[in-house]
Structures are given as structure tokens and as C-alpha cells.
Image 1 (cartoon, rainbow, N blue to C red):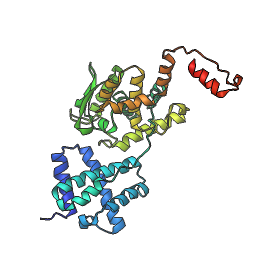
Image 2: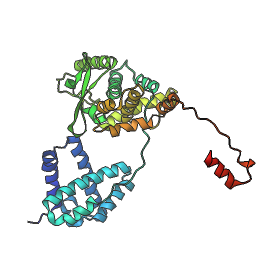
Image 3: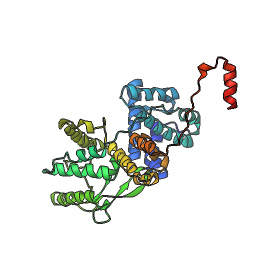
Length: 341
């Protein structure tokens, strides 16, 4: 039986293949879902093909290229997002190739689409003093201010990714010694990260007040928004933006490295650990990187660290020689004499 129904293939891809055979996390599947929502929207707006009418015969390599250009120009997606959408499509068509061999040529053509090259962005991170000033911005005389301070402090001290922070439950936090937080990262990887005594004290105080205000159990989310629901990545970014703006209003713009995001606090922690002399391999484990190659990026961006390393390097004395080439009118003879010295 020829399987040419796009909707059937997409349904089994999302309902069975991704969660079952691939065992992908909910966040990864959600990212794939967003890619296909855009893909269906593209076909509907450009070609007038409704989602339930889309067939495999309507898809081509040329149209996939056009879709990628469309999300860049019409949806203002950056190149990295474009490449993420392409990765989702490639994963789907790799699945289609196993279920519908008659579409193998199309699947191979889409697999051959290259990712768009992008320049490496410079990583923005706060200096230690800038970090300290940022964490002092929330007004801790209010509940929201105390919650926001706990969010920013934990985001920095644990170097958690935003989604990892959002997913933390109360049982994942240990405030007694040794203080730790358990994070659930990319690819369903779990890591337990140590926390400073200062962070543990702040989180412990926040938790005590939260339990008084919002009766909860151990499975409750550590941080909830003003409506009592789960935070989104945009929500956490909004909290950081609020206090970065406050820094600027208080004449502290010099401590803001640029258009920062919550990930900048993760970068900040990594650079600060590096400057403290922590080996890269330990920083790799702390950040939850699968390879130290990714972590090595921090070693390349820390110009101050490089400058100090150069200044502290052993100076090898080099004897200076002065050659008066103008005194010898015979250039050939000068060269012969130079080589024979």
C-alpha cells in the first residue's frame, strides 16, 4: 500500500516515533511541533493548501528551500532558528523514508539540504561585579522581588539553562549541606549541581515563604508565575530584562555587556569558574555539556584570561642583531655573507 498521506505520516511521527522509538523529551518534541506548525502555515498561505489536504506530492526540495527563506524573511527568524526548523524536517523525512520507500528520492533530496552558515556570535556575560549588581536589583521588601532574586541567583549559581530552571520542582532542591539542585537537561540528561551557601539560604527562605503562600507538595514547581502557573522561557527573560533596565536607570549601564538573555548568566558562571582556575573538564560536567569541545568556547572568549596568561608566560631572551644592509652595495654578496654567518 502506497503511503502518500502527509497527515498520516506526520501523526505517527509525533505520536509514536518521537516519544516511543526516539524517546525524545517533551521540550524537543515541542520544538519539532512548532517547526511543522510553521511548515503547514507556509503551505496554506503561499499555495492555498490546507493542512488536511497536504500530500507528499505537494512537497519538493525547492519548496523546502522556499519555506526556509520564508521563515527568515516573513517570520524574522534568525539563521540558527532556520537551521533548527530544517533539522526537524530532516528528522521527519528520514522517518518517511522507512515508511514510504516510494518517496525515497524526495527524502534524499531534503536530507541533502545544507544548513545555512552563520557567524559565531560573541558570548555576552556579566563581570563578577556586574553580576553582583544585577542580583541586588530586585526589591526584596516585596514577595515578587524575593521570588525574582531567587530566580536570578539560582539561574546564575547553577548555570542552568532556562528550561532546566523552569522544570525544577521542590524535591529537586536540597538546601541543607551539601546544598545541590538536580537539573534535567537536553537529551533527558540529569545532573546534580552544587550550590553556594548563600544561594541555599536564599532558596530556603524563598521556599518557606512560598509554602506558606501557596500550599504545595514535593512535586510542585519551585518557581511559579503571578497566576500560579508554570513559567515560560519568555517569562524568565522578561524578569531579567526588567532588572537590566533597572541597572541602566540607576547609572549602571557599564556593567551591562549588551543585549543579554537568561543564557548570559550561564555564560557568566562558566567564565567566572574558568577565571577561578577550575579545569575545563569540570566546567563541562557542571554545565552538562556532552563534550569538552563545547566548553572550550569559553576559553577562547575570555580575553582577560588570555592577556594574563601571556603576561605571565616565561620570557625567552632573544639576542637582537642589527644588520646594516645599506652599507653593502653588493646585494648578492650581502646575502651570501648573511647565510654563511
